[in-house]
Image (cartoon, rainbow, N blue to C red; front, side, top):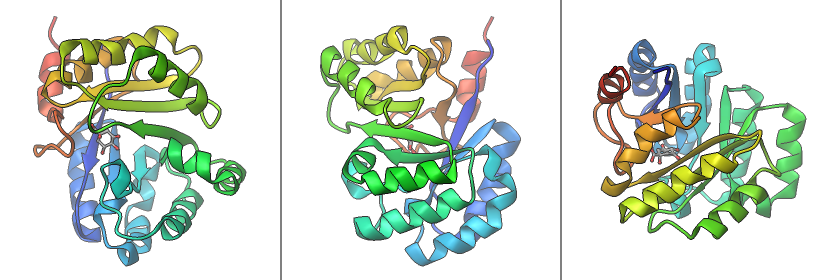
Length: 222
Ligand SMILES: O=C1C[C@@](O)(C(=O)O)C[C@@H](O)[C@@H]1O
């Protein structure tokens, strides 16, 4: 099976990000750098250190309200997101909630031509199918690259996230569920058209994440 992976990196110093990135790119097509794990003032230096690989990097600056660690306020987060956009990464992950609340940011990001990945997360549950579909329609106004991630408490929850692929239209959709009950969806999403699945280098960055080696083994079964 053809499949792609994206290793999530959540390191706390610029040098560690650079070092782990090098190892991750040996094993994975893409890497996600979670800039929210760094101190705010370390972000410009980190961008400079990794700029030659940014064409394979998904850049993320997740706020605490969506399961991230960014310590600053929304104004600060916005200005760092704008800075990252200047570097034109493979994808810039920005939350649907932020884009919805900040039309000026949306306009600005459009002007930089940076490829956006509009994202939405639910760390507690998996909403009903109608709600999920409505969310995707709203999210598609901001980008064709859409990521919608929930938390599964039952197998049905994970299935509901996977059912969304049947309605994806022209969008590049990444839809799966976190948590133990969602693990299966992290693999099956690849069979349903997800451009990649998020993995770790060993230590899971999110609930239920497989390691890159585990996914490699499963996806190469014949
Ligand atoms: O949105 C996602 C997906 C994720 O939460 C996961 O469950 O693998 C990992 C995050 O780093 C990433 O930004």
